[in-house]
Length: 506
Image (cartoon, rainbow, N blue to C red; front, side, top):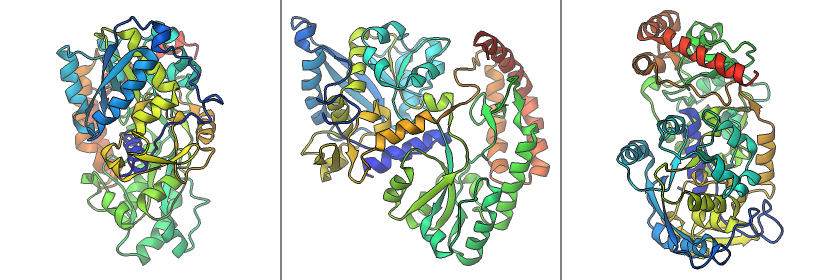
């Protein structure tokens, strides 16, 4: 898989699970987000400026992603650069996505030496581990060694990722809001001359789905997986759990969404689609529809977007994909915390670790070397600020989104020159979700959370995908959730939310 495909698909997964994505590569002194001579904005000191008599420091960095064949080769070049810039070298250790959380939990608990580590809202949970003391508080380090970070990235990332008023990790500067879209296989839209301009909701899809079902028996009209959830007007206390506040809330009242009129209507529609054959009958146990994407045997689905996403999806699948909004671009806690680098509470070199993170997020040469590898080996330049992958790129295919500020990356061949300007416009258009900045402390209700999670495993997928009749199963599910302690969780959430609301003048 190319870097373009891989990076965005990973982001999509994070958003739906939460999420989905595709993103890019590179490193260059002419990048338009740096100053005109290509120097990084932070004014990082060189080894000479910091004092060449200092003994070089080696920083251990644990990050997420499949270990790469050429990692050592790239790090050799990276370390020449960082040694000159900040008198430090990097020992990067990669752990694959499926293993990252578990392995990091074990290593952190055992006191494994490390300086920098990847964390986020969906892997090695940022908020939980910050509260456990796994990460160093970064406020002072950001003010001193991390000043370039504060000057460079969107302030909303640092503000929205505070835990109990403090920063414990450096967020990646990337797309800030999360926005859902309905995606379409354009070949089928064109074949049947279908218009998507008026598709705003799931109900609006019905006439289009009907056309595909009647004329394309080998096509799945709506490609859906078991963790599907209808777009509803809620900001969730815990993502994909049944307690939330309304997006337009004024009183910040926590509601049980299973008792809301919105969920009843949404599930009625999904059930109707299921019974009509628009959705696979195996949807409640389907974890992936990649086979449909590869074959083109799908008509529509829903995904999280980013600027120019249609171009990236089309390049990934090999046929045109277009989309239309299914919701507003909201800035959530989980979207702000989707990719972060923390400094270990046990780091022996916290100042130097922050110097490195500062360089990584402000210096396009370093950022792009770590992201894309070695020029002439893994990529070649096809313009001042544009690259294309060489065959050996397969030996160094890093998850771009996980490595820091993406807005100083090279453009991929075919990207528009204004790509990063479009990202900034997208970020500026983001709407703060009501719970942005609120982090629920579950320490008093751990048993109830576990019990509710067990009930969710039993009822959620069948209900949300239309595989069972909501008229019958919604009440059963709600009864089970309440028996597991949902009301106690909501009460605790309301207490904390009221205190947060008062403290923040909401």
